[in-house]
Length: 352
Image 1 (cartoon, rainbow, N blue to C red):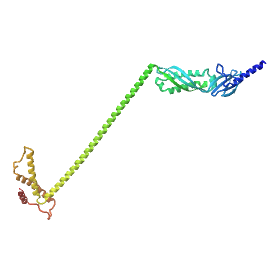
Image 2 (image 1 turned 120 degrees about the horizontal axis):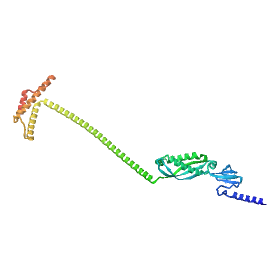
Image 3 (image 1 turned 90 degrees about the vertical axis):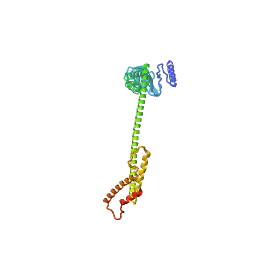
Image 4 (image 1 turned 135 degrees about the vertical axis):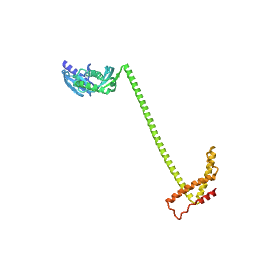
């Protein structure tokens, strides 16, 4: 009777556990083996049989032998986030920094994570801190801020090399914050301000340089254009003067031709004598008006003598030119004979 009562009590406890939605856990947080266990998704339960590793339970329904089998470890297969505490690190240029970070892990092998290390999370956290200190010691302060991404990658590689035998893989490591000493922070701020002033000065000097170059280029172009304009003006002026000289020469040649033709006509010499007399009188009156001191020949009042002298010179030049013309071109019978000397003297007397 006592054995049957104990058996009924055990089955009642088993039914109560079966009907429960989640397995009962002891103070240690491990599930109690009641023969039938439900393993949640993304979890791995490590089972030992009589103190020796037996198997790893898969998610879902699993059957175990009570008293012989025991769930020894429960490993989560999800990505685990670990906050790395703040720590002190010395850079290559002997600057002490306070730095903290966040570590992202995942259990890849539940067996190694259970039996390879006592506390995987604590081990990885300590490894991350020591690796961070060693990596910061290789960099100067300026490179720490510029190469945070490469620093994170180096820490991840170092952790994975050590944690491979633990069945844990480090996915990434991120530095949350870097605390710099106040005096170093002030010097960094001064350096930044100096760098900005330097950039402003360089930009201002470059602007002045470009402005001076532009002004010089403009002056050069202006001088070139002015010289080209002056050259064109001189060319045009010379061309205009040449054209004017040609026009004046042509006009003078035509006037001489007309004058020669007029002199060659009948009574041309008489007309020339009259023109010379008029010009003499006009020039004499003009000299008397323009100046109070005039140099005149002794016989200035004898206009007839002056005109006769001028006509004599003109007659001599005419005869000389006529003689040269007769020597060059033989005369024809139909050409009229030039007037004789007596005729010229009669015409001059008549004019007088």
